Amino acid sequence: METAALTEQDGEEIRRQLLSWFRLNARDLPWRQTRDPYRIWVSEVMLQQTRVATVIARYTQFIQRFPSLVSLALAREDEVLTMWSGLGYYRRARMLHSAAQLLVNEHGGSLPRTSQELRRLPGVGDYTAAAIASITRNEPVAVLDGNVERVLTRMLGKSAARRAGLPARLKETAGWLLDTKAPGTFNQAMMELGATVCLPRSPQCKVCPVEKFCGTKGEHVAAPRKQIVSRLTHYALITRPVEGESKRREVLLAQRADNASQMPGMWELPPLAEAAKSEPVLRIRHAITNTNFYVEVFAAHVEKLMGAGKKRKLERHEWILDSKLGEIPLTGLARKILMRLDVMAKPREVRSGKALPSREGDFL
Ligand code: SF4
Image (tube, rainbow, N blue to C red; front, side):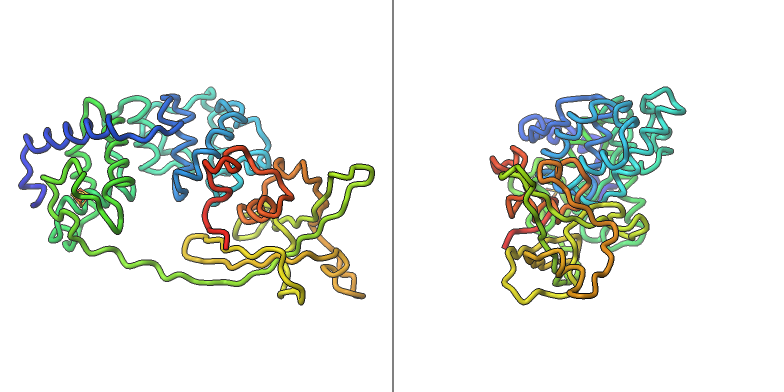
């Protein structure tokens, strides 16, 4: 089946089926309880490249700490990065922060109304602009994220997927299919279908509301998996008691350089060039995009880190009180290690098992 074969009547039926399926099956997500453009914007930026389960807890805490655009704009960057800790891709947080400052300083502190104007903000692409404008202002503009692209590619059929010019075709089809009376809800329904039914490797066609109109019905060639790279890394856990406070301790952390290509300015455990001779106190796996980091953490003394006898200078290292760890921008991995070793308190959502302690990865 090709789009050309779909009639206006088919389009109407697809919209009707999809919207009624969404009414019954939409997940109860915190950002679906608001139409505040600022909150929708925050959720959309967090959801780029991060799993919904991880975003839920971080979104709620972020909004509690920065309930408005103005409060975000007035915050220091390290406060914003701290609240972003565990979501990864920290460039998104920096862009969000600088866009909020721009809006407060030059645009009266509110988000632009149209997708075209939103698109001019730092870090806001076509997808984010369309999502915000359609959900909050009912602008009839279709979103095209990875989930929607997959649904449409499968609906268009195998021959269309092989043909040149597919991206333009997908854009055209998304615009044609959009329900202009309820564009925000329709866009969310399409994304939800891709996220929960039309799954990348095992589409659930039997429960799909648009199965009748689908050109492949699950018969598809899955995109080849990205090659996974494995890396072994080592970190030192160095703590010391706090004088006069038997239950308190400080932990030595290192700050990444401001010009580091990844996570500049973030705090982590001091890296070790090689494994120590002792048994690690923790072994975990931490996945970032297509790299699996196999991480070993060794309990160490500060003298060992400085090199016995050589006393190399420890730059950008600091002793941090355990109760203050939640107030500095930690890398997701450092946060995971410190929680796992009970050096850092786990947030309520993690203790209750509702959210993962970090963006990705499994404890071994
Ligand atoms: Fe995806 Fe299957 Fe629905 Fe087609 S029928 S859109 S492949 S879930």
